[in-house]
Image (cartoon, helix red, strand yellow):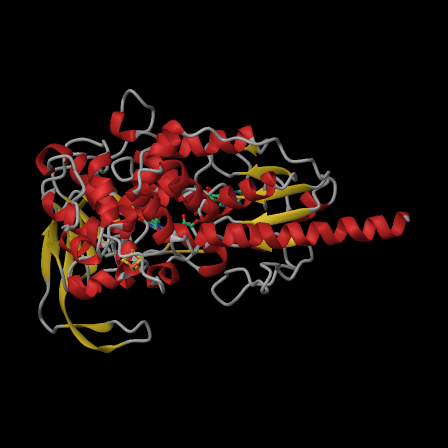
Length: 475
Ligand SMILES: Cc1cc2nc3c(=O)[nH]c(=O)nc-3n(C[C@H](O)[C@H](O)[C@H](O)COP(=O)(O)OP(=O)(O)OC[C@H]3O[C@@H](n4cnc5c(N)ncnc54)[C@H](O)[C@@H]3O)c2cc1C
Ligand code: SF4
């Protein structure tokens, strides 16, 4: 097909559950492109020689190659290209911010809409999960033992890559389930948990051992893992899940949650089906969520599904500055979420029984850009107003949890508590590597996975060096 004909094909839209209906259930919002729509969308790709979209992908997927295979109907090949660079495309196809990564660089942006790279990635991954058989003989065991701390995207990716190289890998996870933010943070309606379970089953089939309910730094220390427990290497990927609070009066009132607690109750503990499950969560007539990122969007859309009316998002900057994915903002709006932009909470107000009844906010205006490049919000004098609510959820950021670093004094961290690494992902302790949010600060799933993959390569080189020096010693 000639480029001029390709240019005439409109971007295919993602089929989704009707907004009024989905605002009352937890099933996935996007239902995925049908095969014919995917083929049409793939034909929109111009197969650029100097494909700028690839440079926008943090793990360097050969985007035109996999899309061309979709256009030709060769889904096996499309999947092979995709999996070569990305171990979890069914997840990234759903949660990556494509609009700021690959799609924003697509040449078609200049003349309309970019190729829907994320939709195609998800389409191929979903097909592969159902149709493709993993083949090949198992790798020869190397006899080396690797401990992975944390079963989020960084830890899972690193574990999978190392297991494929023949190393014996054990993941130690603090919670009762692996998946990290993918299971306790991102809701079912954006990322069905069955996808993660399937990826985890794949890892177990590769021989990866998973030990849950183990807080490294408390149940067992890094020193013990490298000593008595007999591991040659440790990869730390424990994320940055400690919630930050606003620090305003009223935060101790009943009905105030961190987004972390609220989402964990609903996603990981299944609170939306209380009392069928044991964990309750407050579902209320009026809920306010504070923040403007993906976490805030997930929390406010969850509150809406639990019956909040209105479910209101309070954000101190304007819509243009919101860090959340554009699709989440659009979906939230369609589901009836109210937006209070340029508003900042100054106090949470309670009733005589200690329950939250409202949040007092001030109006903000935008000044000069700050160090993040976004315009700094400034309070407008005498502009206070109240938003009534019986539940208030704070989604204003997270930081490194100090449990592990405090019990590993030789582990160098920066002033925010994030672990410092060299170009090979090695920390200040020989044989201890790190990656994901615990190194970068809160970032994205694909960056965490990229770290897991790069660290696995560095660990493999390190272990090969160890094997070589052992061979020298015994020669
Ligand atoms: C609600 C929410 C929504 C998000 N939405 C998106 C999105 O749409 N797109 C996107 O790209 N990114 C999104 N992100 C960010 C993304 O999820 C993270 O950047 C990513 O999960 C980081 O991966 P990680 O493996 O480094 O850490 P995590 O996913 O945080 O996993 C760390 C794991 O380590 C475990 N752990 C912690 N301490 C210990 C310990 N001491 N011992 C053993 N285990 C431990 C934790 O229980 C957890 O399972 C979102 C984040 C949140 C919170
Ligand atoms: S930039 Fe766009 S059109 Fe060009 S190869 Fe990438 S996806 Fe295709």
